[in-house]
Length: 264
Image 1 (cartoon, rainbow, N blue to C red):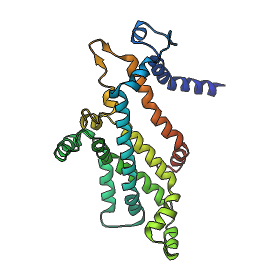
Image 2: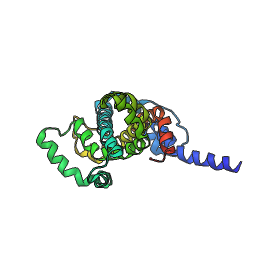
Image 3: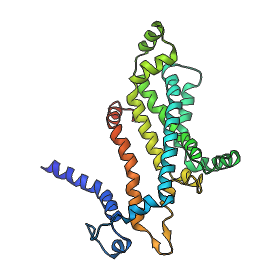
Image 4: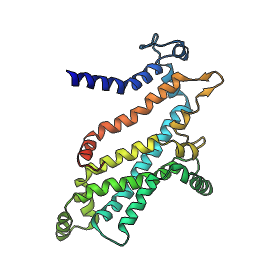
């Protein structure tokens, strides 16, 4: 009973902020600032209607989903051959190169902000979803390589040698035999790439202005002459949880196996 009580308290404290955000999203600004209520007095969907009818709001969601999807695909596609090379071959400076990749993940994003801003402005990529997606690969590719290398190292080398003896070319072996063996690692890697790219704000806000402005940047601009629009901001925050929840639902089994293998 004591353990269940502690578990119930933990779950209540965990879901309380989420409940309160949903609660605020169903109330008007006047009701939100009028006083404390656990349940909305007069629930309304006007805040959600504002998001789905205002181009600056739903456009922000589309922009965010676009660059996050591009970044996830690019990061995993680049990391797969790199992780395979680190797990199967030994070459001069391999450990130093692997450590250098991880240092990019450790560096503050602000260090790379000005070079990215100058580069994208000169080549015409500024204020595009591709610009943010490419900037996020600086951090997600090292993470993806690190995760995938652990999974690939757990696959016996004898499988590679047997496939070559059977006449498999490397692309055919990699796609038909090796990749299915590490699909758990691919799922875990895609999850973390998605989450880090979806939650990142500094690059997403600085490298975009109007056309590719993401939802994270839009949510920071809800102050008007009338004050903070708390209801719309809460509705936007609630909707930002939906993509992450869907990703967790689809890769939940992969994440559990990834933690069990001790790599993430």
